[in-house]
Image (cartoon, rainbow, N blue to C red; front, side):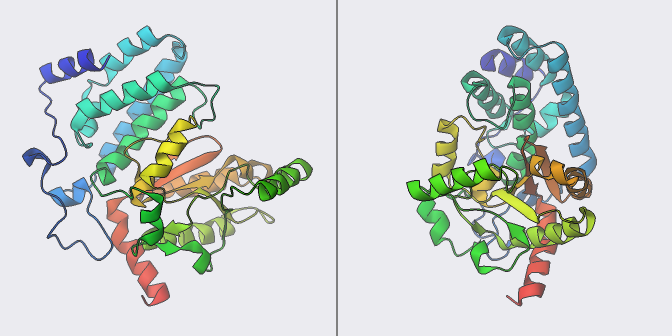
Amino acid sequence: MVHNLSREMVANGMKWTWPGSPEAGSTAEGADWGEGHAPSAWERSGDSPVVGGLESYRGAVAELSRELSTRRLASGRADLENVLRRRLAETVFADLLRQVPGGADAAVAALSAEVARFRPARPSAAGDLVDLIRIFLLSQIDAVWWGQTAAYRTDADVLASNELIDLDDRELDVRYRRQTDALARRAVRACVRSIAPHRSPHTAGLRFTQARPEVVALLELLAADFARRAPRGTPPLWITSLTRSLQHQDRLRALGYPAMLPSSHCTGHAVDLAMSFYRRYGAARPLQQLLWERQERGDLNVIDEGDSWHICLSPTAISSLRHHFTTRTGA
């Protein structure tokens, strides 16, 4: 699929650039982007994300998902290839995909690989192949924003980073649980889930509780807004995933999760929030609306991943969130 589709896109006059090539631009070295902040591709180019353009892209992804669902292509890989070859060559897709690291060729190759490795029976946020394609294509917005930003390669890199702040050291009105490898603790959690299955989201917990200051500021603002909008008795905002290392991303991929690469989690610019957990409280819709409003303002990229929703900071939101953090902390 990749090579045929790539040749068709070349014929349409598309050009791709690879990280490190002259066309892709220089790295962040020597640029004044502020302490602890690596520039996105858009920031390096001097261009700003056009919210209208992103909404057109998101609309095209939704339309493609409906087409794939209507044609019942989840089990028809050959038909799927034909539809993707036709649709991804359209301008609305090509204009964004050419901006990801490696360009459209790399994006299409990555999508092909994700489709090939997808197994619906494995633990995954994607319920079927159509969901996987939708999640992948929306995650390319993250890749344009942060795909050329240096990622945290190992678990040790995350723990040692002076760019990140430990949520355990902050007083935020949010909830999360840490991952544990201790058999006794896992047994206790399993017992609690069987006795009180609705007490908390069914999540493995956070591998790391470290986050960028801008993410901390976002969580503080979201938590306050959610508390005002949610019905009385709703639990506070629940975090299901935060900063990850590439090492941990590989672990998730091995388990069958749609852990895309590149990932804004691995640069510290993304967080996943529990969503289906709040339906029993009548609070899922207010939380969705809150996230959509920030996306419409250009602050976030929001991806419905089922039980949890993924949100990624836009480069244009960094400055205001950093200001909020420094104002609140005096840092």
